[in-house]
Length: 135
Image 1: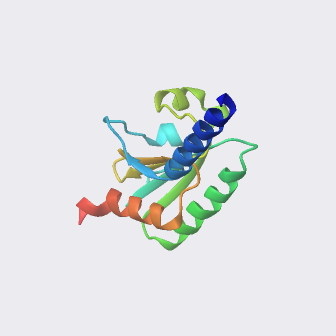
Image 2 (image 1 turned 180 degrees about the horizontal axis):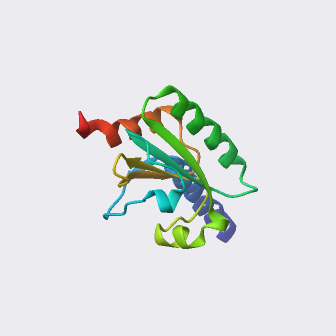
Image 3 (image 1 turned 90 degrees about the horizontal axis):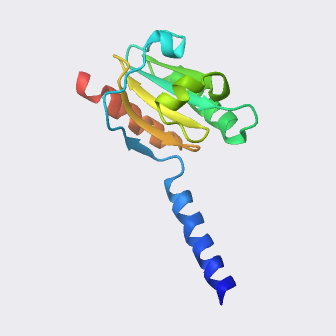
């Protein structure tokens, strides 16, 4: 009976994590990142910031996706930050896993974030949210 309960709890937990994986969530708080924080100039429209680690397979796929989107969408730039080399920033932003993607507006304000591998349409929707009120 205990084994059955453990299996059910595990299945439910795995499903919950899978549902949340890669989904963007609105950020609470006035966090902003500047050029000094991320090491590159902010994009005119938005900046995609990815926190990754060396042995993270989803990080490689996320990097390819974000780079592809940044080359196709005007005013958007992307930067990949090694979480291990920037522990102060990881702590400040409460980055708990890699990949974590932050979407910044043109002023550097964090509009939304996602942990895990996001889908293309999720990233494009998040970008729309970041640049939406500038029009």
